[in-house]
Image (cartoon, rainbow, N blue to C red):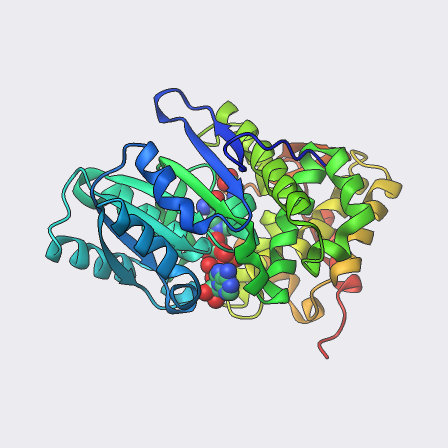
Length: 378
Ligand code: NAD
Ligand code: GLY
């Protein structure tokens, strides 16, 4: 695993987007140095740290104290913990706190937490005073390898997930992989879905690494340098795709491997039964099988994918899902075009394409295949 250490003990991954380019700094045990990176990016002397009570209890102090030591006046806005609070109402509450504190156009929002905090705070940054600076400090595996990178911000609507949002890039992403030690194993495993996805769509070497070490990663039983290298490798994959296609006009779609069925599973279970990453793992089983049916992928490649997912645990309970309801949700998803359901299908380990010619029988077979592999709930 690549573990070049470039930026004072930290790995740097650059997201190349012209005037909107930014660095992702990745280290282990570096949270109290965040304020130095903040200052070196020339960010504002007024900030709002948006977080939730779970993360605040663990990680707010070093971030806030460091900023204050740099002369940055930081207010703290805590939002409730949970996907059900990734809403316009929560965004509205944050706007209120920013206005009351007099934050102006030169102020900066610091999102400290997982994907829910990052997506919501990023959306507020995109829209408050028509856009102010924004920094991500992701503290879940999902957010460190995926959600904090690439500028998709947004909130959910009762009629659909991530239905309201903006592409809005942060000025800096600052990762301390040591924060993952407090993350519940279920959350780590859910984040692994995106790591497996990145390998399958873009990086066979990453897949080979996971084939050797996936249990160690899921148990957070790997050396800090290796963990930093793993996060950096994932950020590099995502940064490369985003740099080529920031607004998902083409290539970026491949980041949605497993998401067509995954998003439908989340929706039909009201976002309560499965973590996002768990639904994506199930979705990769279905999409991988469809890839084989269509002759894009070899059965042996599907087996390699499935073995990785099995080793960290195929999410249970998918047999109870109704195929018809899943397909109806897929057709109304924002990624469908004129009701045509789009799938990302693997072509080889490390290569994927977007496809809009998957017919209903093929989708049903993919769903049945996924269901057969999902254990009954304990
Ligand atoms: P999350 O933000 O809900 O975090 C999961 C749980 O872990 C929460 O209870 C949180 O409080 C807790 N937590 C966070 N950091 C912790 C830590 N270090 N130690 C202990 N507990 C900690 O969930 P998530 O999986 O991080 O993110 C899911 C969200 O991200 C979804 O809304 C999804 O749509 C979004 N997402 C966005 C993108 C994007 O490109 N913007 C990509 C992937 C996912
Ligand atoms: N998580 C998919 C994307 O950022 O495009």
